[in-house]
Image 1 (spheres, rainbow, N blue to C red):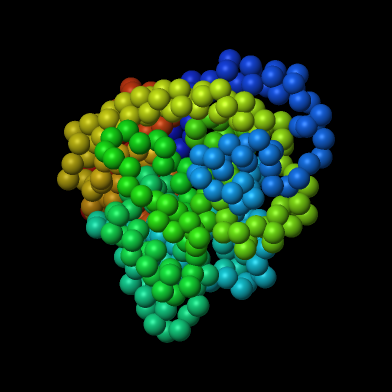
Image 2 (cartoon, rainbow, N blue to C red):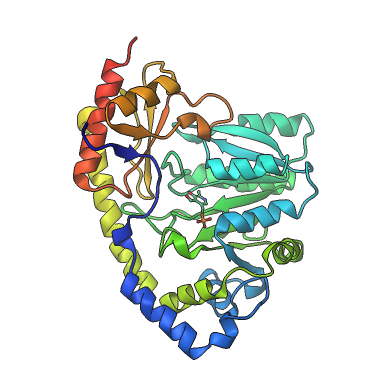
Length: 362
Ligand SMILES: Cc1ncc(COP(=O)(O)O)c(C=O)c1O
């Protein structure tokens, strides 16, 4: 059989890793200040990296918590509240691992659908009108995983207004914000309301996920309770990894890396967009994103996801189960990551998807 094409995980390709530069960073860190990074340390993270982040985001370093990936810091935040006490609104579809964490914290979830013109707040407003007390709204407002969508400015403003009016906080997860290939940035919720927004971001997509360095910038009043959980969980996350990231950023290499990544991914985004226009017109609906790793495709005909996955495999195509991003439904949704595949693989993958959809019975 032809080689299987995996239109599945959104991971950076090996060729994107600046391995030689990272080797230099490791060497410097271990040569110049081994005593600072090889010992047990404070849970909040390697101080020079916290300072670097604080300067970049113009906040007090005391609000920056660096951990083993941003997802892990989010987990500390959630665990710092009593089990089962939280009510959290989410986009639907949304990033599946966050939903897993929220379910593990036994949070009550209020899904709000992403529509053509952006997030629909109706379910949230209905819940608020019933007198429900919301704690957080989790959003991936820039180039969302899984849809690739960008939350329009008017929706960001509405979310901030609702949060202020009803006293809830926003968790804004922005790992793709700096991976923009076209168009102009629009203000994040965090930029509009840093006092009530928990900003979550990561070096996973910008340097390398294997370093496991991500962070959150928290409202001051949540810092101590989050650090207590972090400390009781792992004492501290690896300062060696954080020092590597710090050395990389300090030398200005992050900016160079971002330029390279924008070229690489911007090109792949274009290749996928062209292939989809050629092959999938009439079969699916989608919007070409200005950044990130994914294009979300909504299939026009009613399909069963199990059947689609099976037919995909028979045609040499691995697909992600769209239902994983939804609380209910998701059979019609296919997440298409363009980040890790070569041009030929993207074109062939989309061609195979079109064949499967054309031949799908009904
Ligand atoms: C929206 C979103 N948040 C968080 C993460 C995980 O980030 P980290 O590697 O920093 O834990 C990902 C990874 O795919 C993601 O897409």
